[in-house]
Image 1 (cartoon, rainbow, N blue to C red):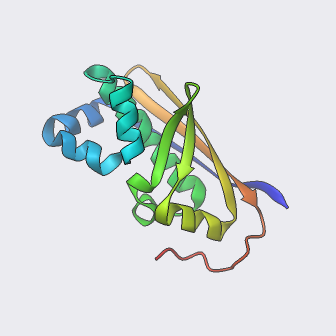
Image 2 (cartoon, rainbow, N blue to C red):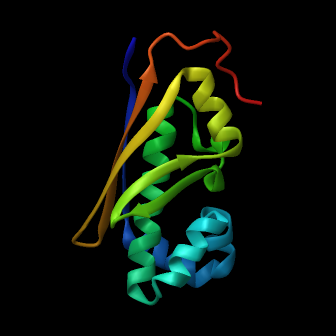
Length: 141
């Protein structure tokens, strides 16, 4: 049977990401973004204040995905949860250990929505898939 496996939500102040960018610069982006996400930033020429807002949205989205999956972000890894643009709308792609963990829970896809308002970024994620996963092992290695 297919259905909703989990729902996650997250909210972050854009200023928090802006301050982290000032302190850590490229290291923050390298830790948070996959190679495809980094290419998206370059291709779309996202910079300045818009970069902080973009990264805050990605941060919130990845936290929401981790919550929806039933695992923490440490178990899945920031770079293994990719939030990519699909005709302007965000699309979630799980790779590496995040994909393995999702398969163990029977998650076939994660739907994502991101919004920004008054210096805040929020995201909601809905994990959908097989409610009776193929294995009872839900541990992440």
